[in-house]
Each structure stands twice: as C-alpha cells, then as structure tokens.
Image (cartoon, rainbow, N blue to C red; front, side):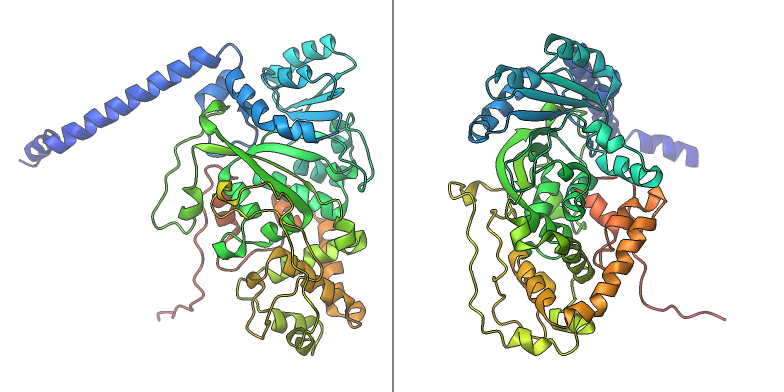
Length: 471
C-alpha cells in the first residue's frame, strides 16, 4: 500500500513540472557549453571552457570585441600617461596585446607574463616577431604573494626572476610601467598593500600604475566609505585609500571573460547580500597607483607603524579611540578632546569624475591630509567613525607625542614584526601579514565576500555564552 502511494506521489503535477524544469535546465546548459566550445575551443584550453568558477584569480579576455571595447575605455588614460613600458597579465591568445602593439610610438617595451603553459608557444612566436620590444615570462603574477613567501623561506629569487624585465625607477619619479589585466584574487591586493608598506616585491621597482578589471565586491571593499558599515569598511579599506589613488573607469560584461563565472546564490539571510548583489554580471575596469606624496604624508620609516596602528585598532568595530590609545599612552585622552588645531579639508583628486557614475557604496578618491581632524571627538568615538584621512591624522598626532618613543606600542609593533619574520608555514601566510579582523566576522566571511576561496564553507562562529554542564 505504501509503495502504491509513493508511485502515485511521483506522478502528481508538481513532480512532473519539477522534472521538466530540470530537463530544460540541463538542456540549456548543454547548449550553452556547446556554443562556448564552438566559439573559443580553437584559442583556449578545454579546462577554461568547461569549468565555471566563483572567483577566478586569473581571467582572460575571451574575444577581440571585448578587447576593442576595453581599448576604447583606456584610450584617454593611455594618452595621459607618459610611460613607455606596459605589462600585460595573462595575455592568452593576445586579443588585447595587438592593441598594445599598435601603439608603437608610446609603448616601446611590452612585457607579457602568462600563468598557463598552453599559451606559451604563441607568446614565444610574438617575441620572435618583436624580439626587442616584446618580452615573455612564464609565471603567476597574481600569485606574487606566494612567490614572495617561498623566497623568504629559502632566500630564493622567484619574484626577481619573474620581474626581471621590469624597469626600475625611484619612488618619487614618474611611474615605471603600466599593468593591464583582469584579476579576481583578493590576496593579490593585500600583497600590494604590504609591498608598499614594507618596501618589498613589486614596489621595489617603482610606482607602477595598474588598469585592471576586477569583481565589484573587491573594488567596493577597497574604496568604500565608513557610511557602508563596519562589515565592509575594514582596515584593508583604510590602508588602500591612504596608500593609493584610484579611479573607476567603466563596467565590462563578466561573460566575456574566461573562465566563466558560476551562478551566485544570494541568501536573504546573508550579511553580505547588499554587496554581493551589486553588478554580479560585470567586472569593474579601474585604475590605481601609489600616491606620489605618500612619504610626505608618512615617512617611509613610519609606514610599518601606520600599518600596525590601523590593523590593531580595527580588530573590533567597537574599539573606542581614547580608551585604546590610553592603553599605550596613559592620559592622552584630554589632548584629543581639547583639540584647538584648525582642520585641513581634503578635496577630490579627479575633478572631472562624476560621483553619479561611481559604483554603489564606492567613494571618490580624494587627497590625504595629516591635519584632517575628526570634529568633536569624545570618549565614545569609535575608530570606524573616522575616514581614512582622519585616521592618518590621528596616527600623526599619536606618533608625535613625546611619550611615543617609550610607549608599549613600539614593543608590540616590534614583537609583531618578529613574528612575521619567523613564519615558516604557508597555511598561515595570510595571518602572518594580516592581523585578525573584527571579532564579529571571521576571516572566512571576508573570503566569502571577496569570493577568494571557492568552495570553502565558512566556519560557524562560536557562541561566547557558557553552556551549563549536565551531570
């Protein structure tokens, strides 16, 4: 009798509709796959066409049409630049490389760094055609942080070998090269910040300017204001905006890059819904470069202290400024409350940029100041209430106090830097250069936001409530 009921249940209208829907979905996926294979199979390896990814670290321009579109967007920015060297990330079948070659009068040196072995024969042919102008390297530029980590362990030269063709200039000189590509790796941007702070890796060669296509959540996270809330406005956001000038250029369709992006399931209960739901069908074409006056704002010897100051005080969104600073310099609170200094306002760097055209929650790039004081600071003011420029001002005040040289802050900084030098386990690489973030959001949640680790489920946050033991 039970078996009969089950059979009847399988034949109801809802079940038939569900099976039909699944069949149609499978059929549509097969047709989409066949169409993609017919379009790109002659130029790309099968693994880039068959497997979709949530967050591909390395992405490729799929065809000549999108390459032309990107070239049109970058045209005015190329004209502004006087740089004669360009580095292209993962050129693949060289759709965009052809546009760089057409600019013979401007780009005298073109560096192609490719991570996939499949494309190397074609790139070597390109080098054979233009031996003096085109240089080819096989390696993962987006994975520079991994190469730098392994170099630190065995005193290797992997980063130097990969960047052997990069011209070297002083920091205060003009940019040494343009970097063009599509990047979906959040750790890559963390590495850029650390490279600038600790004067290592890429920025040892000079102030390169990057023009990249990247996923919207990464760009919003890096350039957001504190109005978005502490879930997104983090220490990385503050550091990036202090260190770099940035500008949004345009939106480009994600479907015209390979590998294809898998479907994003947006849960209504997700705290990150408002960010992950912004333009998932696009990549943001942006440009950024280190601030030329960075060492005037913060001398080079104080950059690690600035990094530690921001990281340490953004561990929790409930950190209040005065109680936290008085742990390092007791009695400093009244100096911040009774502040009679005149504030110096910041202003937009790109005056021709329309705020209405910026992505949602993204902030217009502005100048930085060491005299941009937060108005009306009191004992309840939190670090998250301050803009990046105001945090830079607060740090400048802090390290100019006479007690700073003997404070426990310097001992904590030195201890942290020693730990960074002694790290030998690749699994704690990210932790070694990034202190723990806010205690109400785990690092796995941040990775979920950036889609940096595909398929890694976030660990459940442990409750702080003590449970009674049963006897």
